Length: 310
Ligand SMILES: Cc1cc2nc3c(=O)[nH]c(=O)nc-3n(C[C@H](O)[C@H](O)[C@H](O)COP(=O)(O)O)c2cc1C
Image (tube, rainbow, N blue to C red; front, side):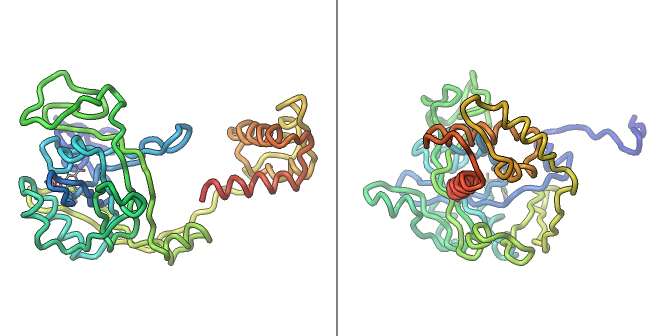
């Protein structure tokens, strides 16, 4: 029985619902890890998303991974991986599907690998230690370290079979699954896209990022090629009035004052972020023994924030 629900049908949710019970857009990454001989193993992974994006003292990704895979075993052992984002060429996706076939050893899958493996920043910075190589053809690479101590996963070891109890979100999370919270050590970017991020993106300087829709019909992995992106400006007239900014600025701290020109610089800040931004200005002013924030100080604070972002 499946009645009409305002134009929708109710679909049964089954295992791997993201590719069996829905259409879910995903990235295509090759994860590099070190096998027991110190060789780099590449495995294809799409369930790899940002996890800690701000407000912690590090940034992190989360990876959902079969716990019997080479990748899971290597991360459990060494804690290190490289997340390589590939572009949308058909030959690369074909190679991703080959590297995504379960049960092959590193030697078997890597002997005719299409991708070129090179050292990343960590290997360059620290010659004594071994790190997974990175893919030279990737448009960007995240070099990551597993945060073992979250969720009590620090004692998780490679085993033939994983019995309960399981962790909630880090380490071995079920009989067949592992989740890894991966601290981002470096983001390495090809120069063209580095320039796009630093100098401003336009519709022509995005990398050709494929969208993976997963393994869908018991036969194929499905993906789409990149299309020129569209820019959609934020709504006009959403800014806050100068009076609102002046009012908030006058109440944020008894010792720090803001000029009207300084407040003018904040009229584009969404109301919900205004106090956070003002508090940031106040703590900068206190660190620098300043008690009047003018346009000039706002520019310095802005420059500091921009350089921190870089
Ligand atoms: C495009 C693509 C995306 C994949 N995404 C995932 C994923 O997110 N998680 C997962 O456990 N397996 C995923 N797989 C299957 C793994 O690649 C497969 O288990 C493979 O054996 C892993 O290689 P490894 O054993 O060398 O780690 C994906 C396969 C392909 C082709």
